Length: 362
Image (cartoon, rainbow, N blue to C red; front, top):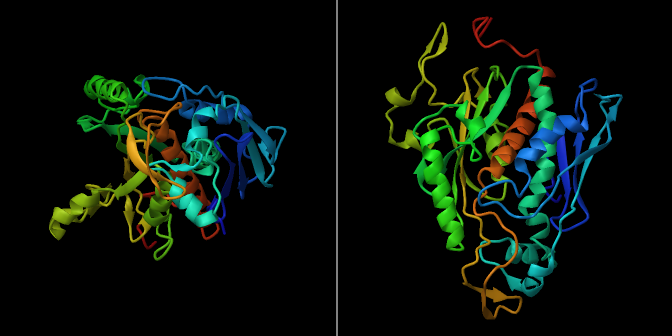
């Protein structure tokens, strides 16, 4: 109960609230003898933390992680790994006037309906701050994936209607928005600046590429790999849609166009997005997620209070103009967690095969 955990063999449970004392995560099922330190996690945390660039919240959190258990002399022990992140720059005063008001686009009304009580400070458990704990867990998952040379990379392909036309993965490392098209970066930044001046926010699209994934991950019915990946990505508060491979484009294809021909060297195209029948096929896995505009805007909005009386609200406080690019690291983390879980599940059945070293039924 509670929906705070994900995974089967590699199981992740997050805890904590946006304006509480700390956030954290417990990881159960991590294999032993995996080299792991606070520093291994920190580079991932630094990509997600606020206050780093254009249009991001001015909240200054160091997001320094501390591993409390499950590691001895720099290696995992196979026992639960507990990680804590202290909240150090909390200012709850802007939320005092919203104590009895439901913010449009937020989870205030639904949390009150479910539990009969809610933490109004920054959204409590519903805050995007919760995703910091996911990123810490994702960093551990990536260490597992590294052993099998599986790589997860998320990058920005659209912000506020400005679309990347080129996919240069080296360019992703060179700009704050983590966009693979250098010609799209400046128009995206201008769009963010305009929205900020207007007191508004922007959505966009993030693409996630998985390279080096062997065939065989996933299960054929309810635990299809794309189903588990979609659930993990949709569990991120700002995500409103997930595409796999050609995604919604398949609705406009003929079967002869949609099928990916298979030859001795592998698949000749990849509209399936690297997954067939719920199981990875050895090709790159390609996902895209639709990121909604952050609902905390400075423009006056109509809403209701706890007595369901009509009121108007103008939100104050420290908020991002767009969840992109901070959400990119969260997407990577959730994908890595699911892949690590399915890698361990597959290894419980048989060793991971190399993509093309044997015929499928040999």
